[in-house]
Length: 337
Image (cartoon, one colour):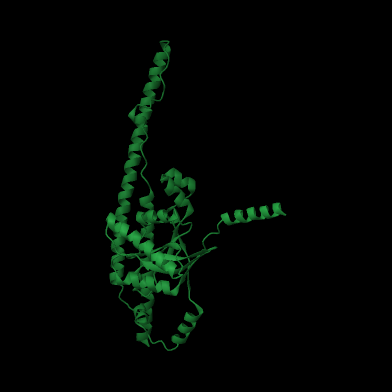
């Protein structure tokens, strides 16, 4: 009986070690309202905050959040921010509110969030939290009548490469990793309690037309499109600079290979002469020679992030342009009638 129980406990422990993949992020409606309020109050400045909740199977439940104070780059202020975070979580624990960290949220401007700083923040969270997400909210995109809210996490294959700090072309081909495999977007599900859902259903019939409804029919999208195109052009310039780095690397590599071949032919001719004279041949490799020193390959991480950002801007422009055409056709039909 004891052996049977021991085996069952071992089996349970083994099954618990295999974590199910994250399928959905379930956020309470009140948390979304807090995030929107915090981001819009300080827009266009970028703000961040802590997400609290529970990790249950394949669902990450976000039940509460609180904002971080806006700080400058200073060690003392950073220490105060960490103390503020710990104090907030202690206070929430005292009033019996979920205080388990499940990630953080941050605002962005026109979707320009795919940076090295975001990846470093993810890696810092991953040291202590097995699964965490980042909620990205874009107030400028939301002004177009769309709730620009998305949940992101880093892919496991990318995190492994980032820990090894090896983003060479050979390693990326070995892992079959491309620029679209850096971030994974997790579906968001909004959850409300039964009382809140009943209250909202009761209010829905008497709700008049709101400003948000009028924003959806706004025909002017020029400022938003112009800013997106400006950021897109900047990213294209950055990508061009990254390509120049790789071109310079491959030119140097080709020049070094040519020097190595010339040196090798000279050494082989010298060895043939030494062999004819009855002397021992010299080695065909000389590690002390500078031409045999490997040239470090530049990291492809920056170019991957820039390509990701360009794709994001193109998708935003495509989405806004499609909506604008729909509105124009709608207004044309109304005028004809």
